Image 1 (cartoon, rainbow, N blue to C red):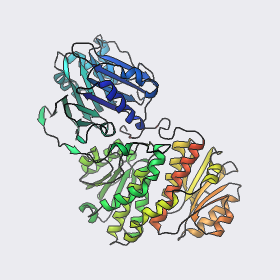
Image 2 (cartoon, rainbow, N blue to C red):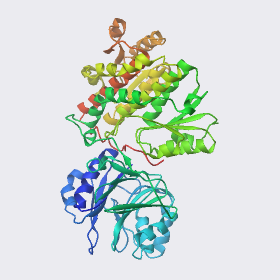
Image 3 (cartoon, rainbow, N blue to C red):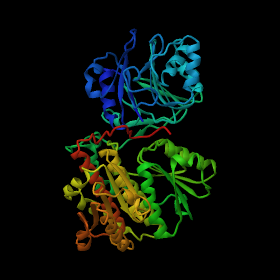
Length: 579
């Protein structure tokens, strides 16, 4: 969930590492640090709690053309200067940065202390530095190879040591990418720190150890040298910049018409496992789970293909009977719970399909087949365009399986998204930003969209928001309705329109302010609403997309009016790579 960057070459390493860490700020962090090395001199290190912007000048002053850096999201030990990475051994000859969790660190630490090692921090990572100290005799590769089998858990590691002119990288269940330059090499948690420097990358696989020098990278797996493909990435530096928008989240919301159309065009022939399936199970977490729920409603209604939906975090521990195709949805391709679910499905001999945004991510190697989104880098922690891209993939799958029933609708859907981007939501924002609690309600696939709308609101505005199937409100949550608890209700034309109108009237009778999202020109809904948001007419898939975007914008405008840190909401990380 945190980030790591490494560099070795001919340029000052600290500046490149610091700039790379700034590119990873969207992943979430509470402290940062940098270590650099010059031939024949001790390792220099600077680390502190807080934002990089508060101390980047001091960190950038470190000397040397080899360096590693880290942004920490606290797991073991409170956020402070001491617990920030890099971590060192007793003699300060080794520097380590680490993403992931060492599950057996407590036992390792007790043994190290018994053997005379002194610890400075509360972190699990520091045990790695001390273990390396015991094994290091001038050959850092040999030391890393000796230590890794002692570690249980997940890690992406970058290691430097005095007396060795190489950076050693290793990964297990945590992403790590090598950037290939001309006379220089880079390493990072994902591609965003590399975009300014190279378009050539190598995705390390679980069990890999990379030996990095300015002119070369060698990769070992199981003690044997292996070859990994050099991939060309099609993301650009501009994709990862705000482009004049106040926040990345707003930029990414406005990118959604293009993202949707690009993704639709990229889904051509269906993967064999999906084309032949008579039923499927979807496993996902968070926003991706909500996309899976929309898919369930659409596929069952259009094609009579049963879909089961499971949370990735529950699947590993409470595995339901699985015999059908299992689809894992993960924007990053590194979501630990979803990866664990797919691995367990494969252990049950089930065919697996991944839907992801990141070429070369772990899920693409775990699953039998992969469908890619075309969202580009998503910097804001709150997912917006990746959700739309997930919907694009899933809607196109439904379209193919239904024999092209929705082709015309989905190929004009990008224009429907464009139509709602400039809606005036100020009245709805005014109703929400004074609330401490908000309910989002809908029926059918709009229930899934209500869940996603509530998630966006709570993530970035810090207002407690809950999504409910509208018919369930009277089974308990009615007790919470009051003039201080607004309801955002989705009431589009269709089979559930009449009962939704009744639900809205029931809630209004409890004195609750109601913001209604419906079809433009619906006078009845406008009359019973405190705030009415009318959307252009369209088919079901267009309506789902338009409502999604409206709720994203409502959350964004509300959070902005409250002065929240929208792109980096508190306590959250972009890529959840631990269970």
